[in-house]
Amino acid sequence: MTNAEFPQVRIVPIRMLKPATAERLLNMLAGTAGIRRMMIHGPGLPKTVPYGPARGSPNPHSDRKAIRVADAEIALRVQVGTVILEVEDASVIEEIRSLCDDFFVEFPYLLQEGKFMKTSPTLVDYAKYGPDADTSLVGLTDPRNRESPVILRTEQ
Image 1 (cartoon, rainbow, N blue to C red):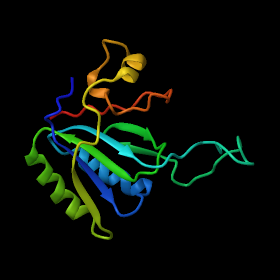
Image 2 (cartoon, rainbow, N blue to C red; image 1 turned 90 degrees about the vertical axis):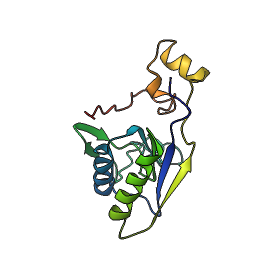
Image 3 (cartoon, one colour; image 1 turned 90 degrees about the horizontal axis):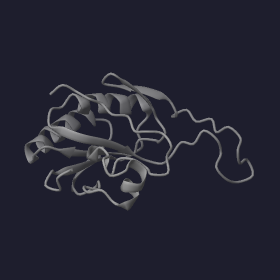
Image 4 (cartoon, one colour; image 1 turned 120 degrees about the vertical axis):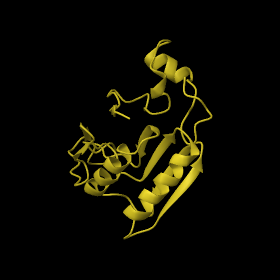
């Protein structure tokens, strides 16, 4: 089970990130030792228009692309607005802060500390994954989504 004692941080850029910028940021963070879990969050990019008079027609959007993070190909289903991280200890937060200071030079960002992911399984997690589910997935997935999350395994 994910321990509630692990610090969590949220990187909030002042604007939405384009796929190329998000890919660079996520690769930089994936190479950082001490990050346990990572989640990107933002408005959805549906393949078809979900409502209105054009419902069901294709929704062409330039930000719905596949990016490469570490050794995995990830199809962006959201426009990257925030990156939420769970880290081993508070010393990793300062390393993340210095990396972000170097990365975000063209526009500002916020680095917030707090609790942003669920840390214990709920009834929805039990219903979706069962009693013997991988607890590292708790709070990282949308229970209504039929696709499984992308798991990056890095050697640290």
